[in-house]
Image (cartoon, rainbow, N blue to C red; front, side, top):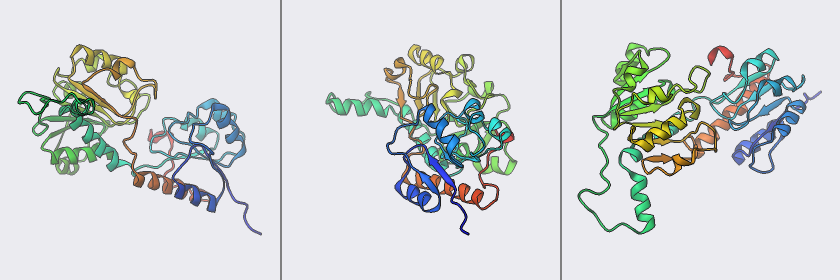
Length: 328
């Protein structure tokens, strides 16, 4: 007798190849349009399926998990971060959680370097002048930015992405410094030519560029708060490609407006799409729509990891990318 196929609900449109493979392997319900599910739609899906495949835009809190019933067994997140899921409650209810780590490391690190260059070399101002037709030709003092070679880069969070940023920054001639929950092994520090700071405050006060690459957890919420932002040098810039909640966005906006910080490059925001309107108006800020991992290669590899996690679970084994509360 053939085994009954696992039921899977996907909350957003995924690359066609990923959707096709999911449909081949499982009893899969795909999203008709590329809009986020409402809370009611998510709750209904969790009650009627074995596996939910959400994305980082789907907030799955304790109340939703508690009401899911007994059918839901796996939440296979399409994304590396799991701060959108109450992992502890899921574990208590016997629901496994998996993610897709590692596949977006290089793409996000590339975008981080792109933002560092865009802010320090004033690329958006040049682009705006060209698009508006106001450029009158080359001038010795026009659009003067700063050279990044020789500058101190402070990396907040030295995981996969932080280390990938460090390698790229070293190739640009930057001096790499970092603060992390745990110090790296000596051989890794030497390979990255990275200097460790036990005190985040002391590192922040001495960096020319501060790069945020840590995950969003209760302990990292507003880690870059108003007090710590004020420690930054007036000619320093901040770049964030990790999670918006790590930085106090309103405090950052005030300091950018007053000239207490030279500039910022942001790909993530504290309140999702609800961005401080004053932040949008500043010429010394580069804003991107959370596109750090937006490459075709990354999205396909994320889908492959989701499929492997579900297939391994369906075969009676622990998903290779299972997330447990102690990891967070």
